[in-house]
Length: 284
Image 1 (tube, rainbow, N blue to C red):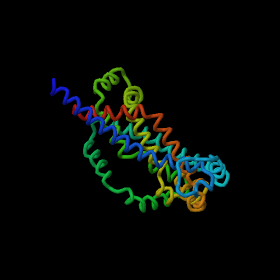
Image 2: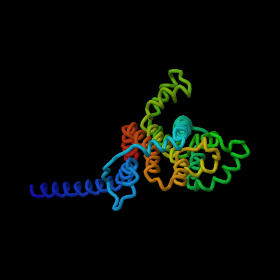
Image 3: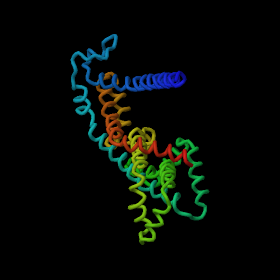
Image 4: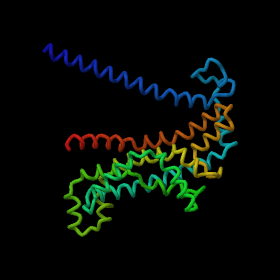
């Protein structure tokens, strides 16, 4: 009985330490965002006050009014939404389709091709910048949405993610659909897609987040101010209005809020995919 109580006490102590560490980590991550949000509603005299304070005595929305009045933020938001949404939708389709082919079909050198794709993940993405720029120039896609969307329509990581998830689906489901006379695309649409919603949600979050925060590639491809995405707009905002800290922080809040909304909307599928992936790894 004493041993049982001591084990319970140890488990409680260990869990308490874990929760404290996680809480401290969450607080350390949340503080910069909270400070950004608070600063975005401060008047100029409170922003410049010393020492800085988390308390806003006279909150104001004038930094947001200046942001949308002096800078075409609506245009930048639409650009980012269009590029990120188009790339995400294309990745969900092409990566899941390729993952289905690699997981459930047998063709010549399937495994070798898949390992070559995995090997490409070891190549730093910066290596492709010069060659990508030359290709975009030859295609005549510089300063266009094509240069931002088409090269990112499918990624090796997405193919790997979908393939690892689809391979755990029983082959009997696919065989039964074939016996019923379903075509390959019908099997993919009616059998595979409904079963891989969690991993598609995870891939959507990763892809949308990556494209929303992409800076280097749009910086190289885009010259027109009307086609800037939000990361480019924030860099220009920081350069032109660097002394107006509240306005810059308001721009950062506008840029990060969609990410929080997207994660909250898909967090159920995201957590489910993490749990299922862990279970699959244990049984394999």
